[in-house]
Image 1 (tube, one colour):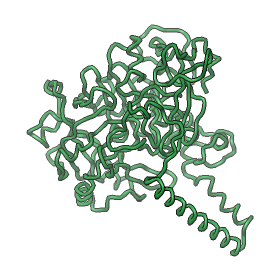
Image 2 (tube, helix red, strand yellow):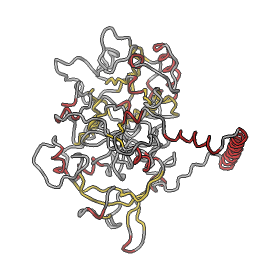
Image 3 (cartoon, helix red, strand yellow):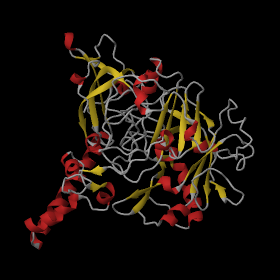
Image 4 (spheres, helix red, strand yellow):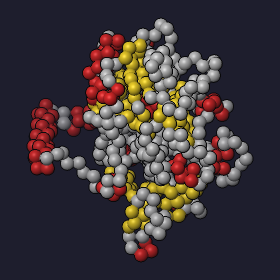
Length: 524
C-alpha cells in the first residue's frame, strides 16, 4: 500500500488549488477535494485528491531515489522523468477492486487529468504521444505478470515486426475513435495481417454506415471487444460457414491445432488523411495495408485478430470462451484483445492512431532474460480474498501452473455439506428453502421494475461530474465491459502487467468512468 506519511513530497490537494476532478468537501482548514466512483456491477472506490512526485517504470519493487544519466531505456533511469502528479489517493474500495489483481485506475484518455497529459504539461515528455503494446500470458499473478510495454512520449520501433501504419482518430478529446470501413473473415487463422495469394479472405456483408453506428472506440481499459448487434447475423453466418462450427460464447474444448485453425477476424480502419501511409520503404511487404483487399482504399489499415486473441482460455476447466461480442445496441469497442499483438500509438498532436505488429517483448529489448512464473503463496492470497486458488502449505512453493490445474477451494464446501447435512431429508429442506428464496427475489425484482419502470441499479457514490452531464458513456456501452478476474490487462511501464489500465487512484481515463470491470494500467 501507499503510505502517505512515508513520502516527504506528498501533499493533500486543498480546495484552493483548485480540485482537478473532485469536489470540495468539508469546512474550514479541513476542506479537501473528494472524488468517488461507483460501477454498474457493484464495485466502487472513494479518494481524496493529492499531489506527489511520480515516475513511470523502474524496478517494480524498489524506489529510485537518485537520478542517473541515460536515455530512459534502462529501468534504473526512470526517475529522471519524475513529475508532480495529481491523483486520487484511495480511502476505500469495494467489490472487484478488493479481489482482482489491480486495485486502481489510471486514465489515458485525451483529457487534462490523464497521466500522459500531466506528464507532458510538466515537460517530462516532449510530445503528446504514448503507445501501448500487449502480449498474452497464460496466467496472472499478484506478484505481477509481465505482459508488454508502454512507451510515454512516442513509440519504440525496436518493438515492431512491421512498419507502423496510421488510422484517423476522429475525435479531438475523450475516447480515441476510429472509422471502421470493412470487416473480413480469413479461413485457416493466422496472427499477422500479411496477406498471401493463397489466403482465402471473405468480407462480412454489412455496409459501412451500419458498422459505424454509434461510433467505434479503441479502449485499452475494456478487456474484450464489443461490436454492434447489427453485425451479429452476417458475422455468425460467415464465421460458421468458414469454421464449420457454431459461433457461441459457451465454453468449448479445443486442441492447439483447432484453435490456430479457427478464422482470423480482420478489421479495416480508415487510413490517416495526412498521407502517413504513403511513403513506405521499398522493402515493405504490405503488412497492415488494405490494398490487396480493397484497391479503392489502398492506404487503409488492416488489423488481424486471431482466435488466440478472441478465444479466452480457462486453465482450470481447460476450455475456451469467445470474447468477441456482437450485442451492443449502439456503438462498438475495440478492446485490449483487439489491440493485442500490436504496438498501438496514440498520437494526439497529429490526431491519429498508429498500428505496428509486435510481440511486445520488453525484456528482449533491454537485454534481460524473461522471468519465470512467480511463485504463489496460495494461503496468503486466500486470506486477502482471492478465492480462485487452492489453499496450499503456505510456503510459497506452489507455482502458478500448479495452482491453475486445481479446482477453486470453494468446492471443498461439498465435503462440509456431507458432514453437516448427510440425510436426504435435510438436503431436500435446503433445496426447498433456496427455491423459496428465489421465488421471493423474483417477485420483489418484478415489483421494483413495475414500480420504477426500469430495473433499479444502486450507484451510491457516483462522480458528480457524471451527474452534471459533463461526461458521456462511450458509444454502445453502459459501464465497463471488462470481464475482470478472468483476464485483466494491467500495464506497468517497465513491462506491462496483467491485472487491467492503472495505478492506485484515478486521474482522467480512456475508460474509468464506464466499467463493469477494469483493465488496469499500473505504474510503479
